[in-house]
Length: 416
Image (cartoon, rainbow, N blue to C red; front, top):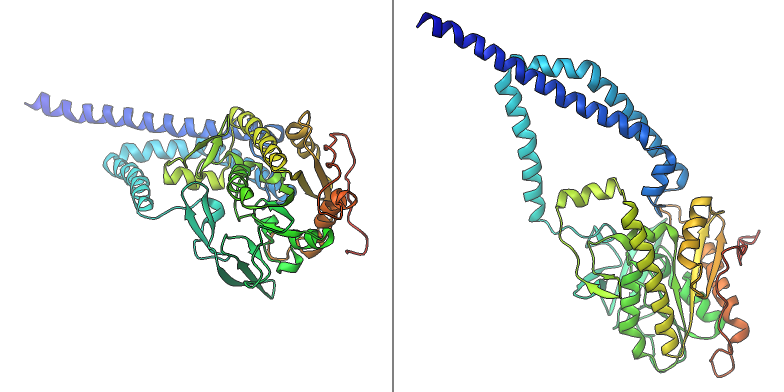
């Protein structure tokens, strides 16, 4: 019995040593992984897998990426050196407590996932259901604006009124809904085209329509991808008896939205697909770390080109001239230029590229201010103005965007 009793502590010590070694190995592996990411994720790799952001200037984006890389390097070095040994000793001394800590962390992730299951998690572009302009669920499109409604929001010290007619189009007044019998120029897109933070008269649609003498029909909806914009146009365009033109908005900074699957989308061949349900924690992680694989980006470029072509074909089939407006704040860097070429080269799509003063944004966020909206509207009007006949038809179509062309419109020096 004495021999057996003396053997038990030795077995326990041996097991404790093995457990400590395993803990050190795991911590070391985590440290090496952090160091590998910090070294391997150079700026070229980051530019390839983290797409341009509408919300963050490139300089900020690069600063954040660099800071994270430095932080990972420091963390990795600490894990491999000091933390690894301390963790091993702690596990050897307090194996039960160490196991409890690991179990608590795992259970916290599980509890978080379960808690979020009971909370309706909207796409990032519709995170706050009660914000203005108010939205409602739509089975095919994901969401649309609440129709026949006026909402108010204080933005930049101004009270902005958002008014929508019975079809959910933004209009200037409830007494002036869109008339389907009148010659119209239709606008599709998302919050930039809706006119986030702008009065109705300041919006791209209102200004371009006034210049051309055509009724503007603003079909755009906050947070839409290019797929959703196309599907909404497909639904709404047949209502119009005299559509003269269809203007779509495209920005490389919004391309990442086309890759999201937390909303209805169009797969290859324009096949409608419902929003995919996935881990709530993974969805939140994707907001903070929007990594995209090469395959995902390639498929996204191919599918986006297909949707852009389909949008132009749909407009032409209804007798309307298609035009894509491509705003760019400041001079596009090499990455943006290359990405834009991949969308438009060889498509023959009619488009106008508009370079805008980078300071012409709303003070509280990144949306275009009234000066930028005027510049974009003027570019649209210039593409059509000479070709609108007295009967409100077009004599010819706008030209395709050249991949080597200089910007068609530059910001004027006086800000008008």
